[in-house]
Amino acid sequence: MALEFRYSDKNPSHPISFIAFQAMHTRIEILLTGVEQSVGRKLAATIEQEVKSMERRFNCHDERSPLSVINLRAAGEAVEVGDDMFMALELCEAFRRTTAGCFDISTDTAVAGQCSYLLDAKRHTVRFQREGVRLDMGGFAKGYALERVRQIIADAGVETALMNFGNSSVASIGHHPYGEWWAVGVEHTLERGQMACEVHLRSSAMSVSGRSTDGRYHIINPSTGGTVAAEELILVEGRSALIAEVLSTALYAAPKTLRADIMSRYEGYKATEIYCRKGGGVELREIGNK
Picture (spheres, rainbow, N blue to C red):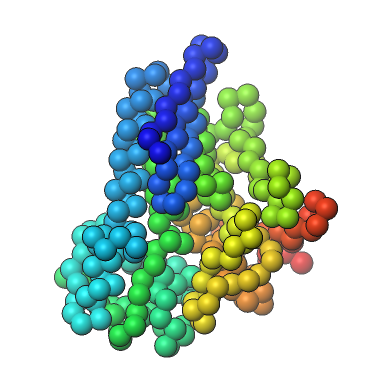
């Protein structure tokens, strides 16, 4: 899909730039308000270039990507990586520790609870602990890219914006021009076209993890290597799009007995279990609150 850009100045007080393109196996949509058309077009090109650069960097299915090079060589030697990749790997290891191992980009399960790769901060290298290790940053890259896009937009002086990555990861700058927040719906998993709940974003972000609306389970359990088949959705709200993405993934993979403990380590974030029922019913359970 080619970059889509639309502009409307029917309301001179709040002109709108709409940006859409395909990347990271999903549709990305961005709404900017209060900027001139030339600014909107320039931001559209910059954002698409940045997101697709990250897609190439973190795509383990592209044999030319830096991540694929790591997967190919790191079992036999220390592989030097660029600054951005090394920082991303350091972040992933920090998230693994603070989520009790429930967020883990490694598919290796030989030693559950331990990091399967070694990072050398001085040389900026990564090496696997053993054969059979493979890294997949799918649960990290989208949140990381969304956080970067929000920074690009904010640095351009935009005060109100909404960024939607595949309807599962959403971030905002400011609030709706005619309201106190941006209202974002979470789709019901069993009833097409129905909303399970509504989230209000104001300079904040949200992420939803779980079974997709077409019924597929795709999140990996780090301790077994198999897909998680839980019926609930996990919704996380908070300041950082990256942390929300990581937490929703980790909490969905985590045993229910661990979820409250994981959330206790992330002050300022709210997590909710969403149980969708046939007929459109919904049950919401906030994690950590009794």
